[in-house]
Image (tube, rainbow, N blue to C red):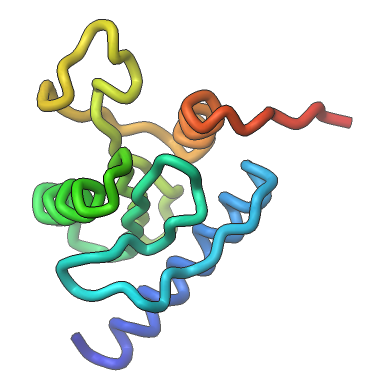
Length: 133
């Protein structure tokens, strides 16, 4: 991985985590001790193993496989956030995490916008939603 790619990845993590901090009302920091095969981009969101990608060419299958491996290692739910230039952040989660009474853990995934992902995170991590002024 080139220096430019590492910088772009770090900038993407900072951007996403800043948004998640605002949406969830908790501190979200980069996991600086992560390794290529193990370790999520952050472990600050209770119950979730977050993988963050910002690339022009989407590789959702490979990225999701990475998110699953890391979540299994961390014993957390996987969630993949990704974004292309001039596009909003999107999230991939297991259908089981959205509707566990209906779907088995290996039944498939769904993609949602960042606000819907934050609602899911709040509901499953029991982070209270904040009242709007």
